[in-house]
Length: 332
Image 1: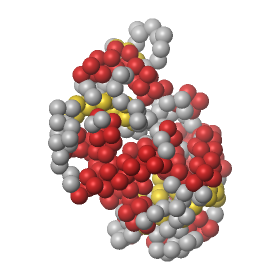
Image 2: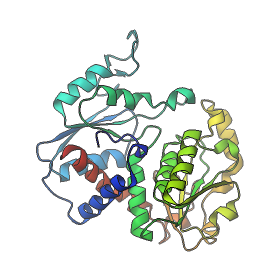
Image 3: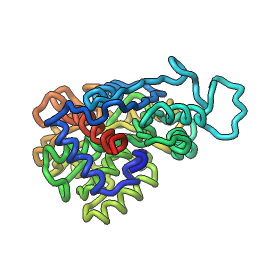
């Protein structure tokens, strides 16, 4: 495992080995396996769980995490090749990656899409530029996918349901006043289908379908794993007999880069909120969300405070799975 950019690059067995180590680390959290090792964490966007879990995880393994915020407390970075750098960026990713690779044993980056042109953003150029120039492992802390969140989610699924194969997993769109990144939705779809679950993608209308790359990946992974994958706009059908409900807001790609129009369309579907009535249709399902979550917008207080809500458990798992990942990438 050279880099960890997307779970599409790794087999189910590879990912399961990380989940198994994460379970061990939950029981034995403080170790010195990575004493003297260093990881640089580059944050181009805000973070609460990602930053804290990576910093604490590195500390618990004996490593040191250096947090850098390009454009704030660090020089701004240019990621495109062949650019005349007469703008705000002070240095190129080629030099940044080169220098940090000499200092550190791994690099990680959080870089959201720019929400201007999906045909450009879908190429994930920022992290791929970093991986191209780095000579040490690179970890994705969220770009157009969020593979660390995927691992935390699947760890939660296995903790709650056991072997995931054939279990009914519902990924439901929820309302948000602003159009958001599709990364977590893409990732939830990828991990649930790779692990053989019976996956339903619940959307308000066809405009909210995810990028065809991830739709095709979900279909092919589902077939390979012996699972099932379907898309529906029928709320009752989706929730009926569900065993795990996962909620996320995301913007519709046909209106990408047009936030006012997206917000207006979103406002038609506030009834997609996850509430107690919908959860009552399930087969005593667990509910989760990647967080942060706007209460009584995405999910009601009743759902968030219910015993079946495992969002905090999933968030805790970020610490364990990322430590397993650090051991894999930095410890061998």
